[in-house]
Image (cartoon, rainbow, N blue to C red; front, side):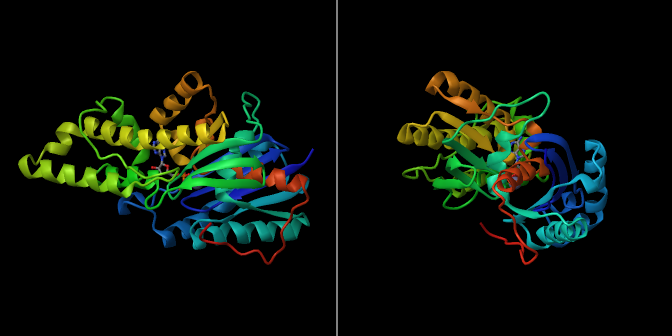
Length: 335
Ligand code: KG4
Ligand code: ZN
């Protein structure tokens, strides 16, 4: 039995989780609403909100887990990549608590945590891949295909040469005035739309790399041209627009994932990160089981967008290896 408290504060969600080994006991998330009116995350406001949220969120995670803090064996925290001011709140809190409880600290890479979320166990759910497996990591800032050989060995097979998939979807939503973050709104509105209604340029990048800036620009110009003729174009076509842009992004992701599976011969294929909440991507992954002979790993919704449960899981792998860090660990912004 080893109880781990995990802390995630890399962007605009303050989250704390408690695990007993790989079993998740609690996963609390305080999402910050202050950014909505600015159409994106304002770093300074994010770090202030983390400072307000962190104590109550950790408290709630411990209470929900039914664990007193004196029972904890280690503290795992996200060291990066992310917003430095935001990370600093979680990192400092983790250090202070580890000092006062005399327990070790485990630093976690946020992207690796998204990938390792597949190993989390809940009383209702456990569906973990074995090594090696492929993971399409799609978050707000990253789009990568990784070959995961062990909990600590990740090889990047391909990545975006410009925008991330999530960034592209968020920009499309912004162009249509749908607010931030746009991913969940586009997903919902696309359900009532025709994905073939509008032709959006598909990227043509060789190998396993991605590109989304051309797709984004193609969408922007198409909307702008229609608006010249019809000022109500967006309102009248919003569902079709959402469905078309979503299909363009998901097609592009799936094309490269299929290519990666063919090239490596690996048929255990996972997705992770915020965009893995997307219902079209999820259903394409399920279809992949039949179509490409995959065993598909699609995380439960609560483990897709930023959460501390995944940080705890990644931390537990390191804890088992005795891989601790000391108080000199500072946050890093980039991977
Ligand atoms: O992993 P995440 O929570 O934060 C980062 O580490 O970046 O990912 C956030 C991204 C945003 O771009 C958001 O729009 C996108 O995930 N997202 C979605 C959906 N839910 C969140 N994109 C498409 N469909 C969704 N249902
Ligand atoms: Zn993330």
